[in-house]
Amino acid sequence: MQRARAAVILAAGQGTRMRSPTPKVLHKVGGRTMLDRAIDACEALGCARIVVVVGAHSPQVGAHVRARLGDAAVAIQDPPLGTAHAVLAAKASLEGFEGDVVVAYADTPLTDADVFAPLFALREKGADLAILGFDAVDPGPYGRLILGKDGALERIVEAKDATPEELAISFCNSGLLAADRAALFAWLSQVGCANAKGEYYLTDIVAVARSAQRAVRAAKVAETKVMGVNSQAELADAERIFQQGRRAEFLAAGVAMAAPDTVHFAYDTEVAAGAVIEPHVVFGLGAKIGRATLRAFSHIEGANVADGAVIGPYARLRPGAEIGEDAHIGNFVEVKAATIGRGAKANHLAYLGDGAVGEGANIGAGVIFCNYDGFQKSRTEVGARAFVGSNSALVAPVRIGDGAYVGSGSVIVKDVPPDALALGRAVQTEKLGWATRFRQAMAGRRKP
Ligand code: UD1
Ligand code: CA
Image 1 (cartoon, rainbow, N blue to C red):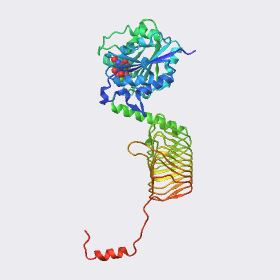
Image 2: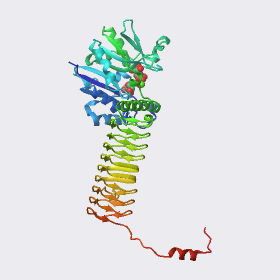
Image 3: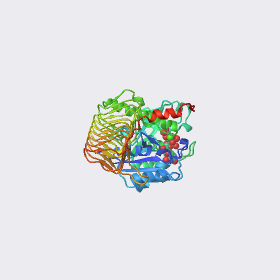
Image 4: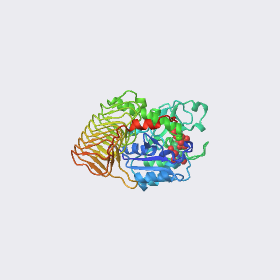
């Protein structure tokens, strides 16, 4: 039977190199905060308890964790005295927990639950402490993993404390680890701070565990999975790698993209096999796309698009847009909180906000659902097979009956019965010969 699992997520760093008023771990990758991504991974691991260690300097981070996981999930580290000290801040929260603890980081946004698998494999094979390493392209400031002849992990040396020979090692510490809860906190209590930075290093538990005759092993993962974000440039790198991953997943799942590098997904975007996505389509949060065609330069957020629908080019679907089967939403059409029925069309320059368009209805160019009076929003309902002429303003609340026509240029302020024609515009008059008389009167005058 799998041992119970808990997680300690470190998030108490200052993140000063982000140079941002937003705390580092609340920056987003794929539209989700790095902190939430770390929590997602720990939840997916089946962690019965998750404790996030936050600094006293960023109340916003504590509030974010409380809102998602409750008060018991927050441990404050004040002041921050190093990574070992940070994990110790979670000790009281995990008192009495029987099982394994993983240490994770709120600034490694590409770490998903699968990344932890080798740690648990090592634990099952008898390792008391399992640590995840990676071969660094540029080992620079990372801690180096020093292996013994038997392949066991002997110790971790921080770059600042390393000899030139040790610095030449490219097998580096990701920081992710797993151990029994009681053993981990016992080792941590023996860690000192006699090092270059004068901090309590989590990495020192390797030597502590070894001197207690415990088995310490390291496993290897891809560097991209454990890369840390410390600056805006690294955040952009993480986003790029995340996007590449999502594009590859969708291509493999049968979504056609002629220029995948130009398509931007969110972490929760869903697209069905057989969908076609043209270049430069951008997804915000909460898009669910069926076997539809999304034409170039469309922006889609919080919207459902059914099979056979055609969106764009240059369309904008906002939260609550429900686009039915075979419906067409064309260029410069914005849909918000509105249901568009099967086969309905709004092909040019329209705003359809707060309402419903029935099956097979036709919305002409330039139609506006006037949904807002400066205080409240109201709904516009267009019935099945209705035809709304170009440049009409439908002043909500209003209902156009099934099969009705609205003449072009109308301002519709009252409900239109089914199958009626509504004209809400000035009656046209013609003045015969007027133009001729005008020109004669103006003859001899210079045009400005
Ligand atoms: C740490 C590791 C290093 C590893 C690297 C991987 C130690 C001593 N070193 O170095 O071996 O290669 O991560 O990225 O563990 N934090 C706190 N409280 C503190 C200090 C840090 O919560 O008092 C948090 C930070 O917010 C961050 C994480 O712990 O999320 C790592 O701290 P950081 O100072 O970035 O460690 P590194 O020097 O990168
Ligand atoms: Ca770091």
